[in-house]
Length: 201
Image (cartoon, rainbow, N blue to C red; front, side):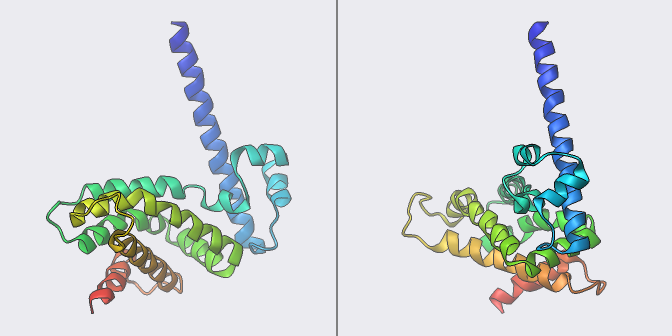
């Protein structure tokens, strides 16, 4: 019983921490949209959220992390979607379909997705953090792509898996940049398919 109570308390604390992180992240996002990324400080976020700097840094490593902190989870989600694709599917097609799982996060709240994209493109520090998080996906996705190519995942001399990841993520960036310009009535997934289709054009 004691073990169950300890587990329940631990689970409740984790949920409370997750909820607090989400709340502070949302406040940071709203402030950056309102004031501009460069004109918003960690102190500003703390003041609005009613927390101290030390509390902020218990949840996030930086202001950029507060806006982009779910990228690691998104990478795992992308890997799961890629693994779920049929083995006989061409690798580029498998990536294209799997990336639909990634952009669903933007499409679920189009206005917020466009605002985040504009923030990233308008602030060099945030754009750098965004690309740094994407860079972490290479090691995550490379073994699955190598497997689909019939290659050795440990062969660092084979550029194909990394080239495919880089090309696919560049297509995502191009897709979001185009989509963020305004609502044309075209779905985000259709824009992605058009961007990725251009590689074979």
